[in-house]
Structure formats: C-alpha cells, structure tokens
Image (tube, rainbow over the protein chains, first blue to last red):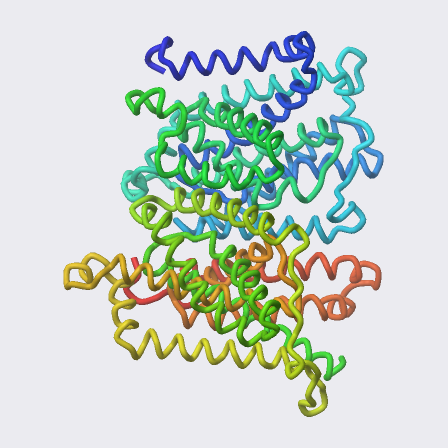
Length: 317
Length: 307
C-alpha cells in the first residue's frame, strides 16, 4: 500500500466504487439483473477475504472453507423453518455455530500440516455436506426455502427491502476487508505471517503457533459464516450445494485469481471469477470446458493473480 | 442381530474397501513419489468407467472392455501427466489442488459433451449374473469377482513394488528423487509410468463398479474424497497402509449405514435412534479419521524415510 496511485490500488477503488453505485447504475442502464449479480459477488468476496486470511497470510490451505457458508446459511434456514425470524436470535446463532464448528475442525486439522491439512479440511467439510444431504426434515438435496429474511424488529431497517439488503452486504464486505487489514498489521498478523514463512523459528522465539493458527482459523470461519448468513437471507434459500466441495475449490480459485496475500485481491478475484462465469455461461452451457483449462493456465502462468501482475511483486504484503 | 445380513453387509463393505483401495493406491503412489496432490484422480475413475463401458457396450463383451480399458487409461494418464501435471511438480500443493480442480471441471464437461448428461448403463455379462451360496448366505457372483480382482491387483501391486526392477526404481524415486536421478534413473519417464499405472487402477475401479451403479458424470468425486480419507488414515505414500485403511473404511462405512440405528436403539428411544442413525452413520468414517489423526497425525503407517 506504499503508493496510492499504484495500478492495484486504482483497481481497488474502481471495484469498490462499482459496488457502491450498481443499485443506481444497473437499472439506469436497463440491466437491473446486475444488482443481483453484484450482491452475489460481494457475498462470495466476503467468503474469499476470510479464506485469504488463513490461506494467504497463514499458509493454511483449507479445502473445506465453503462449509462455513453452509453452516451460516443453514443456521438461518433451520431457525426460520421453526418460525424464529428475529435477527437478534438468528445472527448470533449462525455466528456461534460457525465459531464452535470451526474451533472443533481447526483443533483437529491444525494438528497436521501440508497435504494432510488440505485433505482433512476437505473431508470434514464433506462430512457436514453429507449430513445436510441426509437431513430429510430440512429438505435434503432440495434445500430449504426461507420465507422471510432476518427481522431486526425495527421499522427503519428491514432486509426485505432489496436496496437495504444490498448495502448491508456492501457494509459487511467493507468491514471484512477492514478487519483483515487491521489483523494483518497487528502483532497477531505478524505472528501469522512469520509462521507461514518459518514455523520452527516462531516456535523457537517462544510463541505457541498452534493457538495463533487456531484463532485465525476460527476468525476466518466466522467471517465466512457471515457471508453464509447473508447469502441465505439474500437468496431466501439454502441447500447442501452451498457447502459442497467444488464451492471450496472455487473460493480458493477466487483468492488465487485476485492475488493471494493481498488485502483486496480476493475481492477482485471474486469479481472476475463470477463475472467471467456469468458471461461464459451465456455463451454455452458447457462453459466449464473453457473455464477448467483457464484455471489451469492461471495457475501455471499467472501465479501472483491479478494484483500480483499489477504490482509486479514489488510491494506485496 | 441377523447373522446372514451381518455377513452380507460385511462382504459389501469389503467390496467397497476394494474399490477404495484401487483409488487410494494410485493416489498414494502419485503423492508418495511425485509429491503431487492430484484431484483429477477422480476423473480417471470416471473416464475409465465411460471408456471401458463404451467398449464393452460396442463389442458386447465386458471382459474386452476391461482389457482394452487398460492401455486406454495408460495412454490417457500419460498424456495428462505430460501435458499438464509435469509443469506442476516444482510448485506447491495449492497450485496442484487448483490446477487439478480445473482438470476435473474440464473432464466432467468433456464427458457430458461426448456421452450426454444421462450417463451410461453397462450390462453385466451373463456368466457373472446370479448368486452363489456361501455357507448360510447367497451372495452375488459379480461382487465376489470384484473382491477377487481387487485382491489380485493388490497382490500384483505388492509384487511390482517390492520385487521388480521398476518397483525398485519407484521406491528409489520415492525416498530420494534427486539421488535416484543422479544415479541415472530417468525420473520424468518414471513419473509418467507411475501416473499411468495410477490412472489404470482408478479406471479399473470405475469400470468394475459400473455394472452395479452405471457410469455417471462426477462419479469419481465422492470416491476420491473417501480415498483421501483412506490415505490420510493409512499414511500418505504407504500402499500397505492404503490397503488396510481401505478395507477398514469400507467395512465401517457400510456396516454403519446398515446397523447403526439398530445399535443406537440399545441406548436411545426409538424415534431418536431412527433420526440420529442415518446422520451419524454418514459421519462415522470422518469421526474415525479425526480420532486416528488425533493420536497419530501421520496416519497409521507413515512410510519410512518419508519427508
């Protein structure tokens, strides 16, 4: 962030500005559909920012991160199914569920390293995926419709209003980027980044890396859970597919595409990923046949992602 | 408890374990030797089923399908290795995961384009239909064939790795790639061959399950994740660990699905047991994995001299 006029920062400002004005711009251009697309992009961006916290800054490659989207979403869906619509109950429940489950999953998976970690996070996430598929009461494969969005019980703020919903998501996105900025530049963030580059040395100076990694894992889980509860509210629908493993793979790709270990990279990544899939899917239903090789090419040739290309590795954090 | 059903489900679990082993053996070889995380292994399972299944349908002989599948998968595996995966060896695991994730998307879509979205039904040959009596129970011939084929492959793999010259090269490459290369082993060729063998094993697993389940797009992915669980339990890079963990996982998963609700009835009231049973049984092997990792983070049989 040394130079405010660097291409990466200009891109950041453009993307944020676009998010801010789309609810006015899209209807004016006769494309109101894009308000929905942008809301989705921002929800995925929050999830990608949370993954970047542990993957980009902490070196923990979680291949099951989408599970927290599902947990956050199902917390809303299940409570709403039982007639509890108050946001004051739903949101703490969703956040609490994500905190507890990410604590358990983190405590198990952080005992391992490298490829074991990748596979365990994947397996644990799939476990909950299969659990949600087997939950017949809550719709199994078909998912669960949510009749009304979380109710804050006040007249001046209702998520039923689509513009309010949009800007609530926008506010959470800004907050998630701000929180990760604060975290990364705190003592906590320094320990995280040091652990990523050399864990043995960090242990040698007397820091228990396990606790730091676990804390980061839980923070990321909760942040992703918030994306999940926003998604459930926004779509008025939850289904097991929200947390199936390809979603976790897509999240990883968003982070890498935008630029891992950069503050705003995951947001750009989510933006480019979802716009690209939106555009490609209008060309052909077989768009994965283009998208798959594209992904391979990005991995092979564009390692730093978009923000990495723009900054040329000079001032990456 | 019903003895007949118990034996039958045990055999079904053993058969699932065999399928898992064919998958896990390739995965663990590829990882142990090339240090490559290969999600596209699930695609090899699927491609084996579709290619072998198509040959079987066209020629009218399942056996010809199986025989011709072997060179086909060897070639496909080697082509994939040479075109894409080879560039990934020096990269980190994250790049492996992403690039092979891209390959899965590609292969799934390519399969959908070629074979259509419905999948492919492969009939069982007549001589493999029917059941035989095994003591008190009758068991389908074809499932016995799967078990026997799997055990033979496991034996063959053991002989290949432990007793032959190529096995010696594989072990040398696994324990120290640079040193083996310096001693004149053609490492790139070795990697291609190992990847090809892995692809054949995965393809075989996919093909032999096809008369039971039909070939479907994305069929390899659930098996892939179970195979991950298996190699994490067994210890990455260990074929013996993969074998034992496969059988244990297959049996526990299958038995859990059939008997957990009966078992829970011993402790819980009826409706609680009936609703908790299916949910808990789908989670059982993951809980097993978590428990094993808690005590042995390297798995049950970490290979000697691994990184």
